[in-house]
Length: 317
Ligand code: SF4
Ligand code: SF4
Image (tube, rainbow, N blue to C red):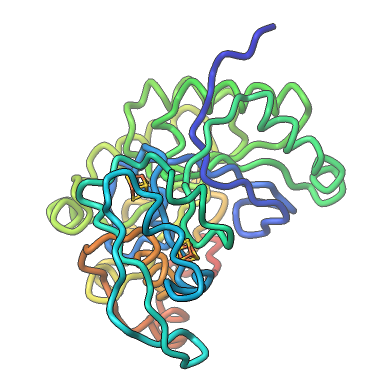
């Protein structure tokens, strides 16, 4: 059968132990309808293939500078004198992303891949070819494949086909989702999804919209519908300073989760960390980045206990 559906991926990671049971291979799809200021994979947000730059790989304009003349629009110029990680003087390129059409000409001439294009169109066959290499590890460990993002259900046809093919190969499947998609999309993948990794970022819809850009009603409704349809979920709660990191907010989580308790296999608490900050630089964006002190171990333990006391299996990651 001809495989015509292509998905836009930005990574496929083997040997993951964070994205569901056992050893897993996670397929990351590009594009997300949410804009979490603490996003640890900002390269996943845009639906298109885009130019990234990794400072640590760049050897500088004096030693190289090939990108300066590669851009047909003249968008790359020599930046101010600065220091590299070794404390040596260096001039890095500056890219005017406001007029960039992501043509990739600069990335082509950048030998150390400091400039690189993020986003690869792959067929289901190509992804399956990669995944099947890891099948012995899935079988040995009780693992499988996790389709993640971005929001993988924003590429519904590709994700559905990929899940179907995994199930046909006897592979355990997980879908990592924000839940912010029409329920009909979730309903279509449900028969081929052993587990949903389901994000609940905030229980206050107004705050959810104010900070993340969309309200949370659809997300909560979809979680209830998955539970009613017999689906299984690992609920993922990012613990974010000044957003949801307090006892009152966790009481709201507990009240909601009690209504879908039979469907919740595990609650994962994901403490805020600062890994996403350097990645934002790579995207050559001038956006404001959310920076805060990560929650303390004591606070994480206390929030963990609060939900455990309701009878949930809770883990801190
Ligand atoms: S990707 Fe953007 S910056 Fe690079 S060559 Fe093309 S237009 Fe210029
Ligand atoms: S071509 Fe690459 S390594 Fe060379 S200066 Fe440009 S970004 Fe740096």
